[in-house]
Image (cartoon, rainbow, N blue to C red):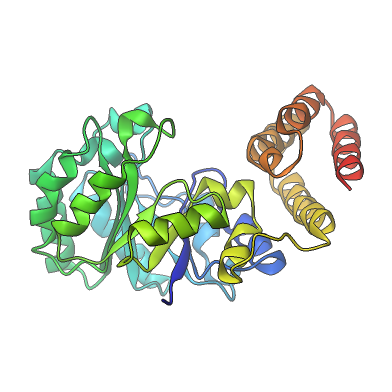
Length: 315
């Protein structure tokens, strides 16, 4: 069965710099979703969002913009903006689990508010020509919340609904709710994409067998931890390339150079790289030790020395 691999957006990680580096060195991702645009009540697009979506910064990539909002005017404003950039689709985030988002009634904190969801979708489909897709969790408090929304979503011509099979309260802890995802398959006419814990080729095969009708698969944290994974899934192999460390080193060096240029001050650069290594370390033989080495590096010189040592030892 043919399938499509998609990059699930992670705020602060999967920007255009990451997308370009991953695609160039590893490949395997068919479609990238950009991290969400959040307006916070002001109808203004931040320059960082603009840079992330400019077509010239995403050459050769299929990218779908994403918005997070609980306000119809904001949705329409972002829809108009991305259409002007040449994008035909806008993905609406009802999945973000972080308290600072959910307490504002956005992300997975909006799933139980069926009236507001219906209002925004009604205006989106009657006042714009944008193609709307959804990125959701199963709910915030319970996995049943989404079942109250699906009948409303079925009344709109959505392109698809991507579901991360957790609830918002879990953040990224605990297991995925596979039975609840199956309930969604059984209770909607829409095309569903699966998202959640695809961290290895074996895990991907396990999910394929569990959900044989699903042919679109989203990889989120697994992509940052292991940028080889999409190509390995596509090639149906659990074997890493022989030059794994050289490739990973080139990937790191590309991102490090770009972020060193775009961020100001060594504190910001080191913090950015530390957050990336929280994921990167999982690909190495002693993740805890490696992350400790990175955290101890309090200067650019020490950081570069630590990274050189990590790659040398891993070889």
